[in-house]
Image (cartoon, rainbow, N blue to C red; front, side, top):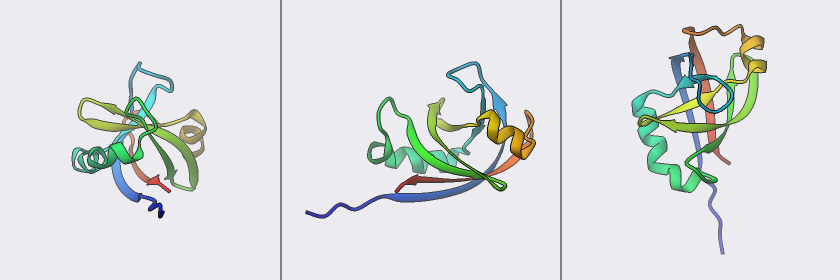
Length: 102
């Protein structure tokens, strides 16, 4: 029996927002077109409740988190450790790289 790992790498640029949803409160939305691609693969990537674990990179800072579905797109939660290391403020256009799957 063979197991094929699914690995998807996505790069995008979007502005950081705040949302008083699940902690943390800072997120970078994934654009609609890339969110659609993720949604098509979600069943293979999620570990439940629609969240999808990812490895990410902003600038020189690498992190792990889980994408959160909201209003037809996915949000990348941004931990304070990442925000402070990369000096990201609300509204800042930020380049993000994420890797889904392994």
